Length: 218
Image (tube, rainbow, N blue to C red; front, side, top):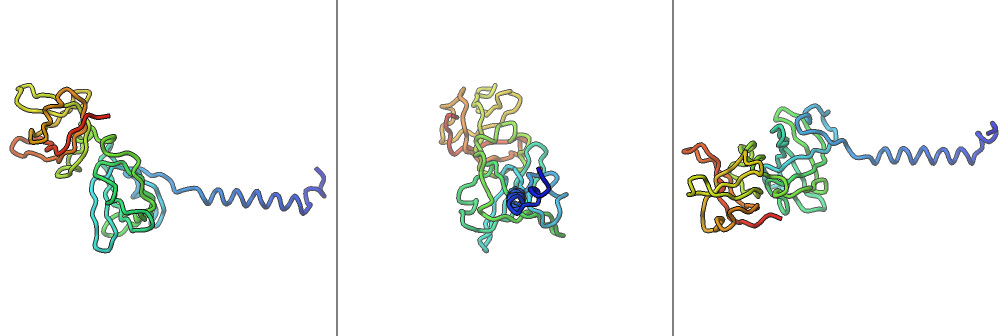
């Protein structure tokens, strides 16, 4: 290509368009997905995405909502403050145990690290019954104690034949299931999803699920 061609106004215009498109594409790229365990290394004010399991949700008088997301692999947690925008607030659709993706700005202060997000920047990726297993609940029970959760497992009769336990498919983990008016015993031998409150029985140092609803798992 000749020197005159390289310097032509038409070519210069084309190159300018290409450069402009590249800049626009770069600017539209979303913030990075950051592990919850290392969010504290992000700069104050930086926008990030975090993926975690909802373990608590509070509604404030201001209309904002406070959430805590956890990484069930290492137990790390992060606080989220969600302000209302166009989409509904998480409390209208999210439940403890749901896997959520949140985008927001990191704020580090003397009171601790918080991610500030808007309701438009919060999504449920997987509902709790597809996230919580007997194993994950057993290994992270402190995060869910006193909560109503939906957990999936195999319902079995105890060795003594007097009670029920929800077991992991590996049979390495199990949680006692209180027999109440729900009639969970009808589903013995089936893989079920329990909607139940998780309690820690201090007299026996054991976890207990108090079911309010039982269905055969899909």
